[in-house]
Length: 121
Image 1 (cartoon, one colour):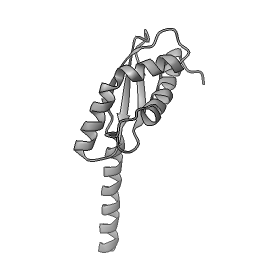
Image 2 (image 1 turned 180 degrees about the horizontal axis):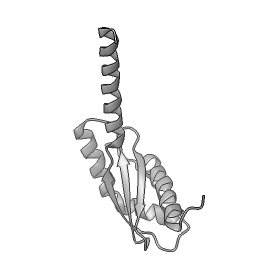
Image 3 (image 1 turned 90 degrees about the vertical axis):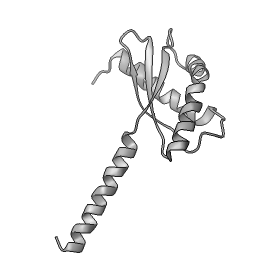
């Protein structure tokens, strides 16, 4: 299976952005692991939307998200240094709640299973 140039660039941005956020951002307000779940790149490679996810309460999420938003210039600069492409896209971030949603669904399924076992199903 062959990937398009956009898909290859998106995967590279995803890998490198994850490294930068988790290893190079030295802000103590970032608690825990930040996961880059997906990157969407426009056809002309001028803009990339980086989807990020992290686990924690609402206040920690908001703080971490703000720190990452404020570090956008640094992250783009680091992408330019590490990627072998002529033009580094403008980047933006979006929260991806799919991991938390999956955890919540899993907990509900476990509760349902326990209830069924208790009732003898």
